[in-house]
Length: 121
Image (cartoon, rainbow, N blue to C red; front, side, top):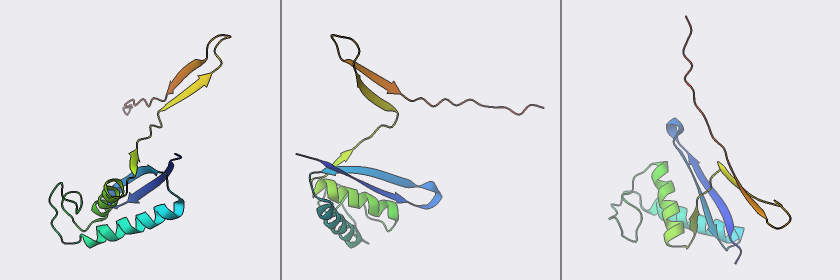
């Protein structure tokens, strides 16, 4: 099986944004059809109260972009079999020729350090 990874994202007011990586063994064309179906599903929930755990969607529907986005992700993972992926940009793993007898494995972690700078009088 060869999984393909698709990125879905949104940007809303006051820097509210989201990004999700979904994986499944489908063509780009099939993903786009599934995405359109998920969008239509999310739009059909306008004004409908949804019970948690029902097959109609996640939580209660509202009419804002983050909720539509959440419903689209829910539909693709629950009804279309996509898997949600997590990606860490702060860790990299390397396979290296460490010696004559062993293959070395290394992990690189990126760190962000914050330091408060006070104004000098």
